[in-house]
Amino acid sequence: MSDAKTETDFSTLETALGLAGERGWREISLSDIADASGKPLGDLYQSYGKTALARQLEAWGDLAMSAEACDAEDSPRERLFDAIMRRFEKFETQRAGVLSLMAWRDGSPRLRAELLKAHARSANWALACAKLDTLGPVEMRVTGLGLGWVIRQTERAWRQDESGDFARTMATLDAELITAEDRLAALKRFAPGARSTSSTHPDTQSTAAAPDAPEGHQAASGAD
Image (tube, rainbow, N blue to C red; front, top):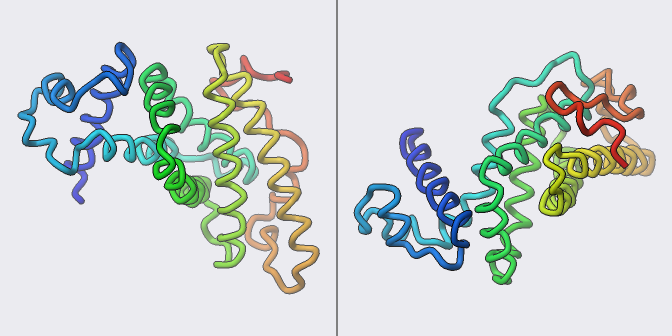
């Protein structure tokens, strides 16, 4: 798929999210989306059905994680924090529509099941955005599984976060990253021979303390 195609795909999704924010995802039709997009309905055949559009939501958020380069001097956890927060900042730009789509998606067992794989992809992309995709294959998989859980828990917090300053979202993400880091460290102690992240990322050991809120997120510092 070319870059131009991807931009068109997400443009259609964003149009649909805008409509969903006004009327609800369930209430908008494919014809409504086509009209608002300025496209003939035929352009939305198969590839652009409402279910297909709903499946694009995770990738739309994922690409936001790479919108800015991470600071190589930050700890691994700080880099992951920044990357994952960009995902939810993107969701916030279409909050009403995204929440409506997610609520509609919750009613589909198939789409809910697909989220497990989608969040695994999100986790692997977050690791790449944080320059942590140099781990060994086993450690990459274990870390990705844990990070997928972090993303799911943070999404739940974001859906309930009406503060406008991401306080609940940031506090949840920070706590979940600390827990995931502790679990990975414990797993390594019971897996002799596993490659230590500290050999590749010497600052890994310095992440035991909670990271300072990155610039632009200061309002959430001190959140419960």
